Image (cartoon, rainbow, N blue to C red; front, side, top):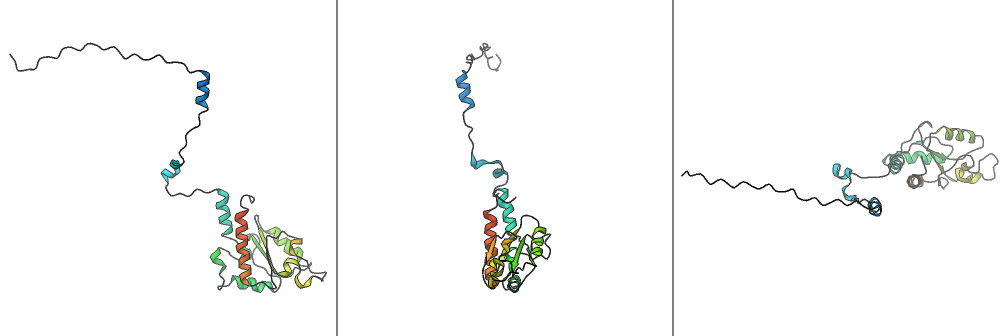
Amino acid sequence: MSGSAPAAPPREPQAPPEVPARREKTGIEREAERLTPVEFDRGKAPYRRVLPGVLLAPADTVVAMARKSSLWPLTFGLACCAIEMIATYMSHHDLDRFGIMPWPSPRQADVMIVAGTVTKKMAPSVKLLYEQMPNPKWVIAMGACAINGGPYTRYDRVLQGVDKIIPVDVYVPGCPPRPEALLDGFLALQRKIMAERSAVG
């Protein structure tokens, strides 16, 4: 006798499991399957898995934020209000912290500050400068003379408000308004740019 284990009896071949007959779906079941809403997990968007911490914002909001934070006012003055405008640009008020950069050419500027009295002789030049500015562009009427003629309401040669020839976005009253008032006008213009972000192309 050998010490090897006895051979296992041969296995009988097993029949394959019976596959249940596949029932055809009815038209109503197929229609219900097609109309079942797709489940969407908002917390597992692909960009959140690949780049966590990414802020999603509409394009018009991003463009409006860039526009309001990089205003380039056109540097020209018409009367005594221009002295207050110049004082606003100085280091004491520091418009640079708001991204406001004075620019001497209308070809790149996007904000016009009408600072002072607009005579009918000067009005065509103001209108030409406005037309030379690229879109989008905004106008700030600074001082009583630019808003409604100021003390010159009875003078025939003074324009009774610059909004008679160009559209005005922000009015800064005063005779002359202080630099803080013009600074508040810039902040109001920034809020307007954000509020109208969908309307401006």
